[in-house]
Image (cartoon, rainbow, N blue to C red; front, side, top):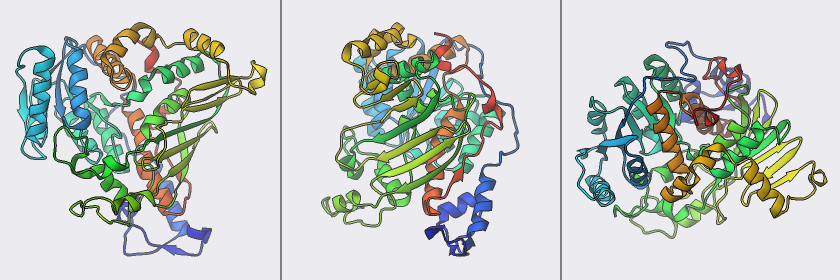
Length: 475
């Protein structure tokens, strides 16, 4: 534990105590806590059947109900609408009527007519009424992260397929409940990890598939994005990009660890085929000191709930090191407060090649033993040679419809196309959970002095099965 003193005793926060099934009123020894940490990795009894490669009957036109049309939801309305007739928005829900009004105005502008769409607003539980409708095939959850899991669980229980924004869960218990519900209901539950569809990321994935990197050894991923002003914003203007009730800043006040792991980690996990022949085994995590949030809190208006706040639980930089079952390593970082250019890192090392993102650079062993980055001609030659077939086929449409450079469009295009065809989706519930459970595991490792914490096996051993990644199927 702290100071690595095995004879010392430690009290836990309510969150970590809850993870381990322990009391906050007692102190625990190193060995007691290690035993409890080991218990976390024990798989729960299966109550349904695996949804790996799940395929359901074809849905000719996917009828969509959207929960949340604020920041991200507003842009998703545009993207989903652009994919008609593959999908059709039939219902929209948001606690704030102003957001629904804005979304309907957008649809009228895009389609040149007023669409007949059911709307639900007025309170934070009204979404349940929408989800019960019998004319919805797919529920799209675009709400604050703390409620993603329970909304997805409830929607599946109502017979709906679900996609959710990231991360899909913040706790281990909810992770298991999501998996069990998907397996019991045999419903799709996919996390909307749009970065997995990035042109650079799918290019690297295709090179890995073609053995350009040789044997993979190490990856680095992150979400490094200066959001300081946006985190503190409490503007009620529906056109403002403020987070609903400052939910994201609230997490920084309450939790240490990596609060937003999936954008950088998802692609690296795909390169290493995590869940399809490899798995995350354990991690260690630590945060830097908190400085930026506390200092900035002194500059906001005194009527801001977080004015002059100094006791934020989250440090400026969160760093975790993950070990996989195949002894690969991944450095994962999260920093949304430092004044730095945006980066997801996107680093991959193998015996024959090394890539580093932001800007994208590639070195090959066969080219001067990798001592230099490839020049523009050689780099562009490989970009063309190994461009992923999804981008070869869809590049023009993706760029025209946009959404983070086309990633959002391709994500929904693939989702709706596969549902139309009745084939498996590119990502499954196990992917979403494995990438999201980083949040509680890093928090727990931090609190216990950066000790190793094992990952639960949500696939119950099925990760050992070598499977093709969905991004190469049904194109």
